[in-house]
Length: 186
Length: 334
Image (cartoon, rainbow over all chains, first blue to last red; front, side):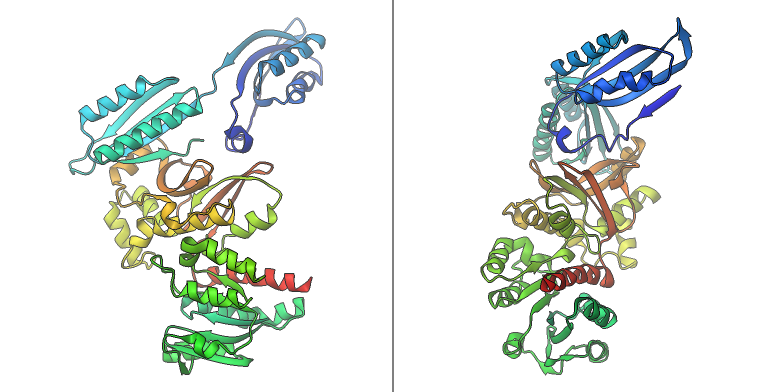
């Protein structure tokens, strides 16, 4: 089995910070002969796609074909359609295809006096916001009165939703006096 | 190249030592003699159009606590006014209230068409526009690599080597003292006050640590980067600033449970101009410990460029000043 996973920090950054990409996961059935993997991946890069990962099931050969699972990102539905058309022309079968949401992480640490009621209110408000995929909280309380901390983490489907959550927490921090420590947003 | 050194504290002495060590070699490379023709500190002044011996200046400072034989009476320019020089190396202490005396020293030089090299953050963080416009109006060069990141090349890297790129954001650890404290809190489970005391005992933090731990130093650097690299006309007070005083051991511990560390991060981008504690994944370049500075520059073509190095110290700062001096020598060769 062959894994190709790109450096998670390298693939972030520059133009990608400002654009949203469609993430696609496919199972491709390829002839078990040399050069087929490159032949299958080439249309993705030709159409401006970004290959995130490839899992090559070399050990399972059925009818002279092997299955390769490919995760990639494309900028538009049109680019995806061009890739699919090229695979069809090249006689590469798409056994399964699913698209994934690109999610953005929320990580915020709240430090200082936060009552359980206040924390509940904060969580309810965040959970009710648009484009939330998941949200959770963990907290620690020490004997010291100023030793409280809570960490909120989750995923949202749009970058704007990250900013919405952070703006809300910044306002609450100002009102109630806790310190907000945000994640890097990578 | 004839030089005047304004300020003869730790950094000024470092510059004199570096000129003593490397001056002759640089003169051979660039075909131009490097001479110190004036130097002053808060009390005294020394001038010679024929050049001063850096070793003698350093010796007098060490023995007598003053760089010159003459009293400056708070106005060194009264004595220096008649001297001819090419470049002022302005290394007086940073003053974040009004930028003085550095601002006046720099303006005197720039208005006379002299080049300025500085490590002094105050004048640039408060009055960058005044200084850069004065330099431009008098065809003088204003160089300040040493103001941000000590020996870590950030400004010249961004402005010269990455000139063709669009820089989208810069973020990083701009203050080694805060990083040391936060790292000790995480590694040893120390409360903030104890980690600070340890830093003070080791000479890493000042007796009055507020300039570092309240994010003032980092905010000055963020303001300088905003002006110098992003062309934003911002001052120190425009930087949204949160220090590390409120970071508790519980917060550090909770972050660690999530495989994160807390670091004081300066960020300059289209969306933010701020200094604040941030959660950084362990293993991320910005999660480094110790007193080093580290900066990530995001550009449209090169992507992410990360530079790290010693952020403060006598020779580290002198190294950055030397890089500016060499840039001026190269320019003179053209």
